[in-house]
Image 1 (cartoon, rainbow, N blue to C red):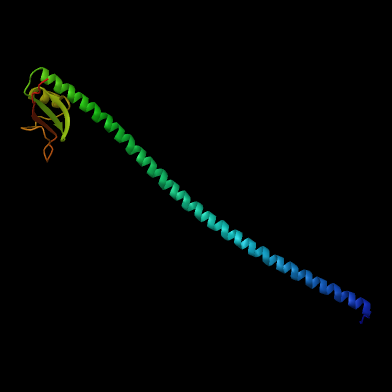
Image 2 (image 1 turned 30 degrees about the horizontal axis):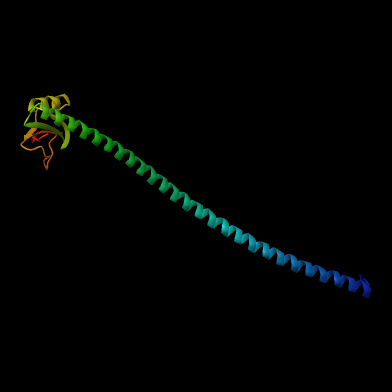
Length: 164
């Protein structure tokens, strides 16, 4: 079956077809632009996620480092307070020994570190035994710690007379 189309109708159909092609081209261009924008947004989101992960790792490292440094600082402050207290006690003991006109004191060391100061070797030994020392320790002629520290040792420390 054949259909007869007038020229006027044919021209209208062709105009509609051309308009549809133009609309299609515009929509395809818009879709391509949207796809490009979506790809850029996706790439940007991926980069942001990677950067966020790296920053989280750096933050965790920095936080761990800060906690470690804070712990070290706290330990150093405690040690400094102990050292200050040790010096004050040592000064008081030496002052007391000078008042008693002793010519030497005996320094008790535990593992090479200063433990206490005594007026006789017997009191130093008693203190060491109270702290759990066995009956083996060394008595040295000097109060300086040895190169190989013993668990417990006693050093003689001569006092110098000062004129007040």
